[in-house]
Image (cartoon, rainbow, N blue to C red):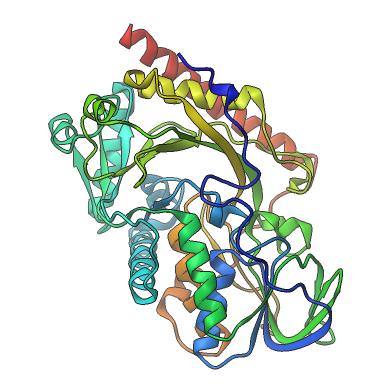
Length: 448
C-alpha cells in the first residue's frame, strides 16, 4: 500500500499549472457595453455569446481564466440537476420537472456543439455518466430515481449488474443509472480553449484584476484595485467567489471539494478493473457522492466525498490541503478499487463549488432596471450548465426571447446569515457524512 498523503497538493489542479500567459491587468478606467466579472465557463461563454451578437465586452478575472471551479472540477459533462429527480418531482410537479430535465439535456448538447464548433481538443469521451450503487441498500432508491427519470423524459436507463459487467465497469459498482447524454473531458483544456475563442472574437480580457465592488446606480460601474469599468450592463459570473464582491453572494453556499489523480494505469491494472473501455464517468449513490473517471492519459481522477464549509462563506484564505479530508477521500478510492493497491495517488487538489438552497442554478437579472445580471450556483454540476448559460444570458440581456430562460424566472432563494448558515451547513454535512459512514462500514463488512 502506498502512502497516499505523500502526494503533493497542487496550487490549481492536475489540468492547469500556472495557467496561460496572463492577459494584461486593467489599468485605469475603461468603458464597454457589458462588463463580465469572472473568467470561468460562465463568464467566457457569456462574453462569447454577447460578442457574437455585436456587443463590446470586457471580462475581469482576479487570477487567470479557469483558475476557479472551471479548471479544477472532476471533468464530468452531465445532465444531473437538482438534488435528485424524485425530489424535483415532489417540489415542482411533473410539468416543470420535465422542463428542468430538458434544460439539463440542452446544456450538455449545447456544450458538445460548442466543443465541435470551436474545435476544442479537450479529450471529450461522449460515453455518458453512471450513478452507481456501491451497496445493495442504495439500489431501491436509485431504481425509483430511474423510474422518475423515464416518466419525465430524461435520457436515463437502469443498468443491471450484467449490464455493468458487459460495459467493463469496475466491479465495485454493482448496478446503476446511466445518463445517456454527456460524458467526461479535460476541464482545463475546455476552459483554456474557450478563452482562446473569446480573445479571437475580440473580447477584452483583463486578468490579475480583482473586483472590489459592483454598483448599478446612478449607472453600472465595476470597481477594481487598479481602476473601474463603466458599462450599460454587468454580469456577475463568479460562482463560489461571489460573496467576495457582495450581491448576489447571499444566494450561494460555497463548499470546498478535494480531488485526486492517480499515476497512470498499466494494461494489467485496467484488465483487473474490467477494462473500462468507454471511460464512463461514475459517481456513487451516497448522500455526499464520490466521483471517478478514467482519463485519456489512463489515470483515475476522483474525489468529492467530504465537502467543507468555512465561516462567512468567503473562499479567500481558506483553501489547501487537509490531512483528515485527504485520508477519507483516499480511503474511499482504495475501497472502490482494491485491485489498485499498488497504484499511487500522484496528486491532490481542491476547489470551491457553489450550492443553492433549491439545488438549482440561479440565472437572470438582479435589479428592476435589468442592469445587473448573474448566473451561478450549479451545485457541483456546472461544466454543462455554465458553458450553455452564456447564450441564455446574452439573449435575455439584449431583449431576445429564449425559451430556456423561462424555466428559471426567479433568482435562487437567499440563504440565512451567520451564524445560522454555519450551523445549518455543519448540521447537514454532519448528518449526510454519518449516513455515508454507515454505508461505507457495511461495504467493508460485506467485502470482508
